[in-house]
Length: 408
Image 1 (cartoon, rainbow, N blue to C red):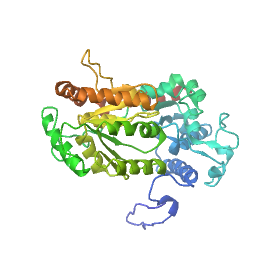
Image 2: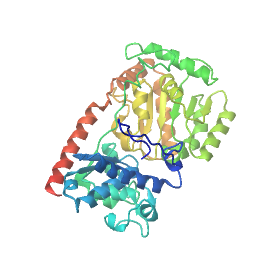
Image 3: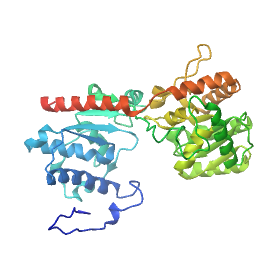
Image 4: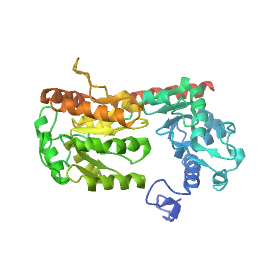
């Protein structure tokens, strides 16, 4: 092993292996091999320390092979018959599809894996195996749990998921309010809370200066923190953004992703230097300054399993403009001026025109100081902490254990 704990008569041994000591967790050609090895290592570790958990919760394709191995071992060893499994899907678009040789290269063969008819011929699909062989499947919002049973969002696994519909649950991710709290955030210019919203203006002015924008609290400032990919709505954003910038809106974007979007946003920022800034990087402190300093936060996602950006932005009193999909649909309620309800601006159809209409709606209401302040107060009053979600996970763990006991 990479490191063994040293006792009185033991010697510490360190080893170095390039494939296990990379800069990033994933995104390499040998991902299949590395995560197959990880799955096998988890099983071997449980045997080594003689620990039998009641339930194992695996997340996404990277740990899905563990579910398969537990089920295979339960056919041969009584101890594993009592180990329940929960498989959590964070993003169905990434499935971990590899040549079967990745499994044999870590010392497993076909007899160590259960057969799965719904895999592509000649390939092994880690995600499909996690779904198929787990006792319970969860994902990160109720709406996304429904969406992935359809052809539009199922990424080829919709039938598999529909077959598990009675054991498929959506549980929202929570926000760590100890980290994302404008009252205590050390990265922002001036702390504030629901009762001192006027202090938010100081953060806006500081961000405007950082972006070399004209400084003024009456100028609408819109932000986006995102992977720069089609999934996050970059295709419709770049189609609409020129029109938005011509409305004299200030726009700041932070993120990395597809090179074509990085280049497009960089060129747009050069073309509109007085009201657009593109930070093509990841910077956690800057992200929090954007959450605190902006008036509006943009998430025009094609699909969004849960999304944390809209939850964090609401905690900072920054109003989300989102597409009605997945976790965005579950967490952002469209503003209704007749009833004075809602926490953001929501659009339905995935195209640039509907995105633009939502932005224009937000801008119209931004000009009404009383309406906008009430909107900010409602957004900041939302509670998306882990407390509620943690209880729901406890319930599905109990269900998984019960199903395993019954042999279902």
